[in-house]
Image (cartoon, rainbow, N blue to C red; front, side):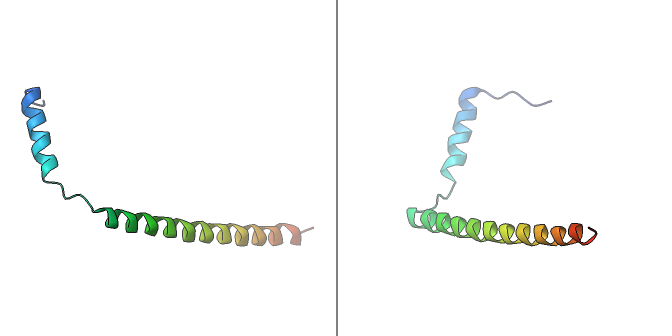
Length: 66
């Protein structure tokens, strides 16, 4: 069973742990954001191409028997 902690002590611990966090700079945040958008673009492009290819292949398979 979890031990109960005084709310004030808990908030002090939270503040202490938050002060240990190394926050990214504005430049690091912007670079990371741009990289995420670039990767999302390439992932969307890949899945679009894979979907089109699979659709084309299934179309060929299903229309051969007719």
